[in-house]
Structure formats: structure tokens, C-alpha cells
Length: 198
Image (tube, rainbow, N blue to C red; front, side, top):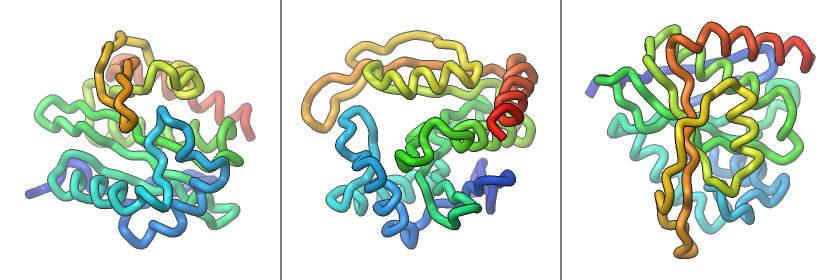
């Protein structure tokens, strides 16, 4: 199968998005320990107990063309500080989602997320010519909802009882998107944010 997404690296001055592989297991666990992120019940950050399933699922979805996962490499510290991915790939509709994003606590609310999203959106709109890029997050994940809105994404709606959480509770998911017509404005906004964050 010829993959729709095929990237060796996406990078800026500060970070590089590298294709995830099994060799990243220990580095991801080290990053997740910064903030004990797996204890946030509304996220999908791996712990030592779940890392194998986390990697197996991500790599299986990459193999069958459903997703393209990355690790986030911080150039200054020379460390992997988190992960993100394209998923729900729909090449026939030129649509995809960006999600499964998390960063070590020490890199949250820094320019890292802005740079990651800039790189991912630029590739999606300017290389793959997507007509829309979607984001989805748990209703209770206020920090994630605010971060997505700051990108310039529009909230499309709320999917109630969208998923079952691992503890059996129901997840309501908030859906956002950026369309191809909005990308030029979003790009200017992100560029300005990066200049202010230098």
C-alpha cells in the first residue's frame, strides 16, 4: 500500500517531529514521568504498564494507513519530550485529524505546541492540500480545548457519550477544525505567536 503520509522529519529551529518507532519507548516514558502525565484520566499518555499497547496500536495504525505518529524531539535539550500524530486519515476526502498530543510538563505552555502545530498544519495544507484538519478533545480537558482554540481552530460541536473511557465512564468530545480557506489567516497568527514567544 502506498501511504498517503510519508515523512522522514518535520522540523523548526527548536523541535523536530520524528516518525515514532519502538526504540522510542524509554524516552517516551521518561518524558511522561515529567508531570506523571498518565494520571490525567482524560488523556492517553503512556505509563510503564501501558507503553507496549500504546506503541503497538500507534504502529499498527501507521502500518494500515490510519495514522502517522511522531515523537517530539527538543533540539536544545536533545531529548524526546512528547508525542503527537496525524490520525483518522482520509486521503479520498483530503482530511485528517491531529491529536494524541502530549508534552512533558516542563515544556507545556511554551512555544513547543505552537511550533508542532505550525509544522503539522503546514504539511497538511500546503503539501497534502487538505480541505480541513480536525481536532478533538475531551470536554473536561480545558487546557487542551483552550490550546486548540488559540491556534485559530473553530469549535464545530460536542459529541455526547462519544467514547467509553478505560474506567467505564463516558467521554464527551469537543470537535474543532481549520479549513483550507482559513489556513492563511491561521498561519499568520501562528507566525506572530512564534515571534512573540522568542
